[in-house]
Length: 311
Image (cartoon, rainbow, N blue to C red; front, side, top):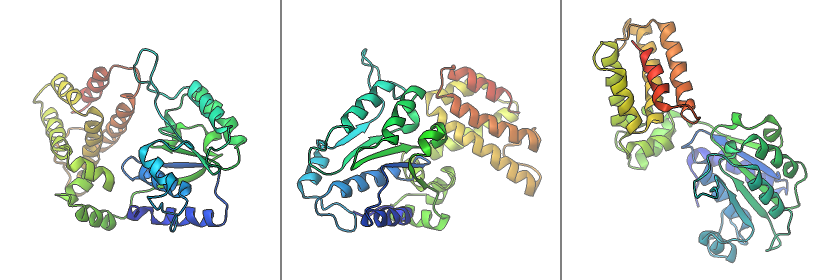
């Protein structure tokens, strides 16, 4: 099993630790969504539990590999957003889930080898859940591996982060990302990569789901608002109907491009009346609004407040 090209260094270091019998009891895999950290975790767990691995990769045919493929390996636990008693999916990982996980990991491995628990998204734990996890991190059982996955590791308490071996996935070099996208057959790889801010995984996903068209729509909306055409309420409704968080990403990106254009050509493609300082503040506000969509505040009011500031 081959990993993504930008995983090679992390993989080599982790396998070197395994060969020295020096694996940590907890890993924190973090970085932007789209860089493949979940695929990396899956590959690592498969190889860790495989009875006949090659260079850390699973054989695919031993009993452990077959059970993992069927999703029924008794020594693997995956913890995510649970379901409430009323059948609604939770928006956070709660303390009872962590307590159940800790009780499970305190038991012996059924196969006599590693026990592996993945928490995804680890940055979705509420404070009580994170505190409950500390005891397990501080007093790990033998041959127990905790794997925390987080797109936003800064949301995790420092007490959690400091007790994990951190593997952080960064954006690959532009040439490497382009080569990979082209090998994957992505059309307009350059445009997709620009839209995704250099993130090749997001670029591949977005290229196939109409994101590039949404990016152009956002820029047209902002240009129209700057020219006094259209109404912010109409734009808000349209953005809320289709991928509002992604549209806010593109809006922040558009304001950054407007600032760059001002520094070279003296004017930007959106013809905003705001000066560079105001554009910078609006860029920050767009990103805060995108984060705000995760919270309890009304999304329409958040977007309306943001777009009312654009001119």
